[in-house]
Length: 261
Image (cartoon, rainbow, N blue to C red; front, side, top):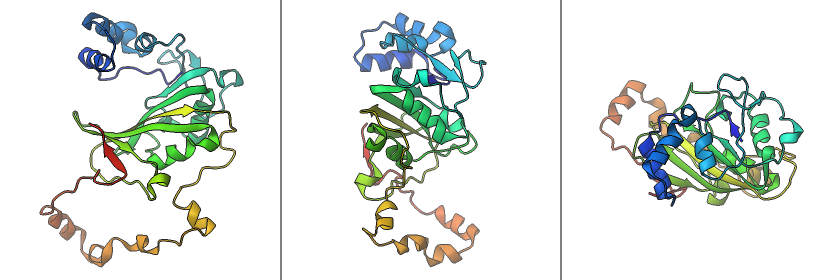
C-alpha cells in the first residue's frame, strides 16, 4: 500500500540500476530503464520487481489515478486493516492535517510481521507541507505499546552525496536527539509490526518528560537558559557579523548519530 501514488521523482535510470545492483539484484540496464519508464515513472513496476504481488495506492483524489480514493484525515475502511505486508509513505503524511489519524491508518493497514516504510521531512522544509517531524515522534508512536518496533532510522541531507546517519532512540540515548542545520534533511525509517495492539490506546508522550512527571529525575532548569547572557543582550546584527568568523560545527557531531557511509 502506497500512501499517495508514488513516483520516481528526479530519480534516473542509472540511479535505479546502481541501487538494485548494490542490493544484490542481477538486473540489466534495459530492465532498469523499463522499471523507471513504465507507467510514466510511477512506482508499481519497481515494487512488483521487488516481489510485490498486489500494489495499491490511496489518495484524497483521483488526479494521480490512485487505486483507492479515501481521505486519510478519516479512518480507513475496516477491510483494509492488516491487509498489507508493506505500507509505504514517501512524502504524503506531512500533507495530511489530521496526522495522528493518518499515521494510525497506516499502522493499522500493516499485517502482523509486515513493515511500515517512511521517508519524510525532518529539517528545513518549512512550507512544503503542514509538518516537519522529529525522531522522537516516530520512536514513540512505533513502539511496543502500539505493536511496532523501529528497526532502522536514518537522517540524510538532501545534497547529493551527503552521508547518512543512523539515529538513536532518544529514550535509549538518554536525552533529546536534536539537529540544527541549514540543508533540507530527510528522515527515513523502517518499522516492523510485531504483534496486535490497540494503536494509541495510550497517547504517546515525549521520553524525557515522562521520568520528570513520575519524579524519577529532577527538572532540568538549566536547559531553559542555555542561550547565555551575551546572546540574549547582543544585537542581532552584531551576532550575525561575528558568525562570519566562527567555524561551523558538524551538526551531526553527537553520540545520538552514527555515520553509516
